[in-house]
Image (cartoon, one colour):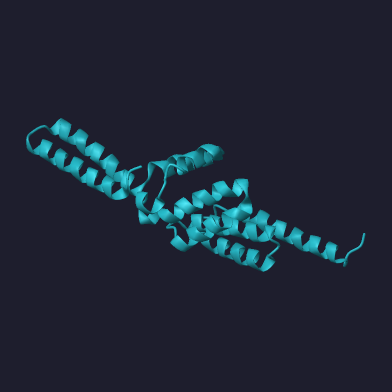
Length: 184
């Protein structure tokens, strides 16, 4: 794969060629080359492998999404700095389908690197709450759930948050039954 700085250099060369074509009177070719340079410049900000991986995740094909994400060998050089958190989020989502407890490090790394969209931050925190519940760490799960509720400003994850709270209340009931307080 191509390093991000190389993409930027290629985009600048193509844009320069487009300006030169327009200056010499070849407006049709100049506009076409300008359009191609814009696509190359756009790939600097949005990596094509991550876009395709997100599409496959929406289609519930995590194997294909993982295949596309694995094409990014060194995300620090191949991705724009603002995409590092999203890359770890996508890897965490794919890993959580295979082994949920191993995906915790990816979600924490994505929160550490930061993401611009608040619903993605809420998704990472909701996933961490689920992992904390699986570990029977109720305090940490409640903390992540409350943070996810605050970060979900567009209310995209309200149903999942409600389901997680219901599961947490079920976890309380199971602990009481196991402790011997309730007998049927």
